[in-house]
Image 1 (spheres, one colour):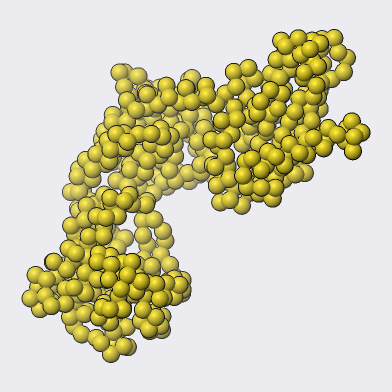
Image 2 (cartoon, helix red, strand yellow; image 1 turned 30 degrees about the horizontal axis):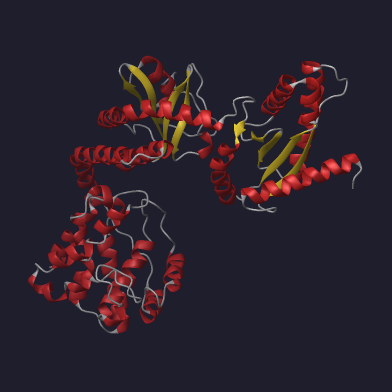
Length: 524
């Protein structure tokens, strides 16, 4: 009987090679813990083997998704123990024990699924199966994380004692369990064939998912990233996924998955790269060994072995390029090309509409007089700034700037002169800031500069250098009736030490700026 049980347990796992052998491992772990606790039986061993058989009913797009499941997808996944019970119940020898599989995701606190039963009211065998399943899952690679070590997995189990797991079972499991390997050699050919047979279905599902995303479209930039995630879910190729759009004669990255988020906004060379070739010649490009391809444009520090670039075309106009880089040679097939072309055709109208939407958004985010960003842009970007800073443990400086005596300048020299001065100030800053920095017009003669990664000393040094350039150019380029250079006052606040909210940082920098003015006038 064991051979038949093992074969049945493998069937859902063949659809998800990372989990191959999961049923075997859970059965062996359950056997060890159950023996140590005096409740072992062959029936428990076989149910443990088959506890996930219900996953054979779960759609592939849910089962193998590499990112967080949506609410509806979570509900679908939570049905697998119900199906496991029904399928195991078809085996006469295990019919009376099938509920053990149904309850292997129930918790001590009653917040498990599918029934929400406090597991201390269930048989001890169920609680053993639940802990052993959790230990197996933690020590296996998953699409969204690497495997925990045995020590790490046991620490995780202990964290949830009393809420999820039975304390007695965890104590025994931590004492007797260690990870077991599973030989996948006999199944590798089956896995390859299964992938080939499933490919058309997966691709249809992906197009459907993209269609659903379009129906609920609210955030264009996030939509494009989700499209790339869907492509990755289907191709299962580890690499970097990009969506680029034309800007003048070059391509600009507007979305990425798997790369550094700082690449968004970068422009490709106008005469290099496979994506540029696909854009200019309006043809798909597959290069399964980029070392032999003269069109390939290597990025410093990146290890790319193969690349595919597919143009997104609507009404004979290229409105974007989907580009994927892989660290492995021979990563891309004709089937991959056909799939990405289908995706490109689906998103082409959205990409064309997005071009208009993004330009409208730029108009809302760019000050019409000076060319600086508007305060609305800073509000929009601030959450991204702080999340990146927190993740990378970086600082950034917010500098509040006030152009000195603009009212007097307007009254004596005229508003056109004052406007030229404001415009020059922004021009000087743009020329002398890094790509990661930017200037915002806060209102009237007040500006805010964001200096990424800068502490106070670095911020002051940068602003003093730019201040000197502005003073010099205000005489050379504007001149007028004054022989004195125009200047500005400033104050600096550092995230996070001066605050974590935009309003707090502005208040701190503004207060320092006024102290700066007062000191200069001899009022302090």
